[in-house]
Length: 85
Image (cartoon, rainbow, N blue to C red; front, side, top):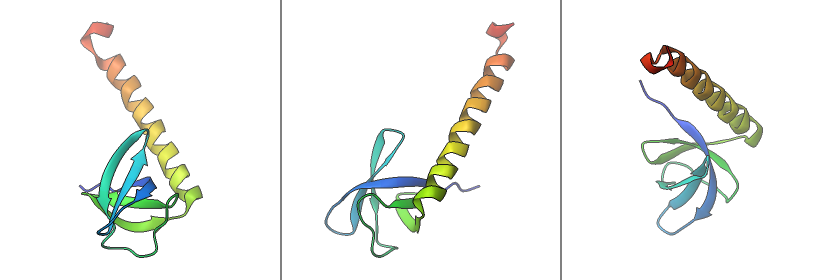
């Protein structure tokens, strides 16, 4: 299974490289596969490459769903933990 996640571009550097931010974490990625990316754009990231641009509203909606899933998994794991019994 592959997972591609939206991240916001915070800096564009030389050689088709950019820095993206997701939940406070920053990572350098390649922009070699897409054109016309600007600081503030959201892009879909997979294995270090920006695959496509994403509408900001759709990106924020997707990120909110990821956060909700994360909270649900954490709650489930806390309930299932032997130390919680």
